[in-house]
Length: 378
Image 1 (cartoon, rainbow, N blue to C red):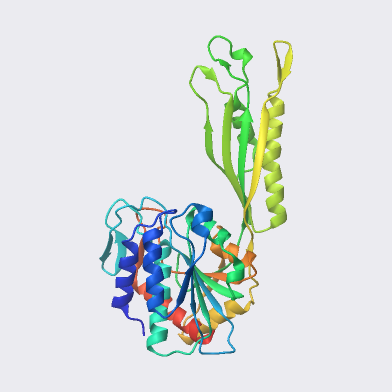
Image 2: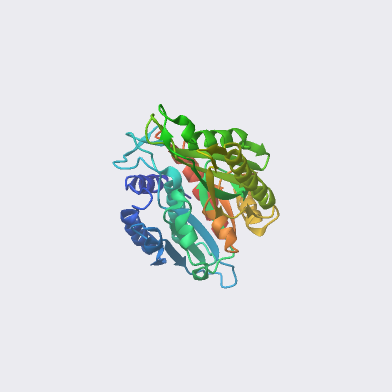
């Protein structure tokens, strides 16, 4: 059913077009024309202007031959992480890797290739199907920016699949909500050798706060991390300012807020601990906490129709699918926030976000086969 050579060729073409976040223009132009060749009506939204990308999100529509069928959303993203410039996909023993010191881009170009091949088969075989909406977002890898900029009023689908995780025969139906955190600590600068007593080190305050913060795995559903520390000017200056950037995630929105408050409280307590009298004046470090809601929780019911659709399609192929929980966010979180019941389908990619990224052709074939059956049954 699947044309393996065509699928391999499509993936190789996609992977050879460098498309790091904000620089998706060339790939966007290719995909718009490729989807039109499949018979889709294609539009580009204004996400490029809103995110600073070279391109907007692509929205493709294929009219259905089943008038009463509900529309089905198929979602992927066109951007990759870096390093991506000069990417050269190499096929050895049925597995694609990058030839050089770049990522391959299987995240998410494996998913794109699988959708294209499935639609080719549906067209060739005249398989009856309902309306299909294909959304290809920009800037997913830098905070789901393209999906966040998408106007949900442009979509009719109330159910969908986002092809964007490792593994095959795998469905992800739950993923956490998350907050981004930015803490600014302002102490008091002084000469570190002549008058250290006249200063309050923002680095010391930050160290005290981080030492007391609950970080890492908080409970089975909650994690937290401080990932960036910036501050200090020179070794002979008591540092005035430090900026910390981190995150908190949880499958429980209430626990997310509890964890966020705990991290902020540790910062405030550390600042209070470093209050002192300098030249007869009480001086306390200042702290500013910026909390940004990053993405909503993805919590599709286990018995949801979209999951049953995938399971039934898999059973028609004599297979089964694993239905699992994830620890990271994706465009599917945003689509669920729009009211589109969306689960994530494994694409076979491995080693993502590294120069050792790969994808096996046989796994892409397996995913494309499943997509054809899903489209047939939808």
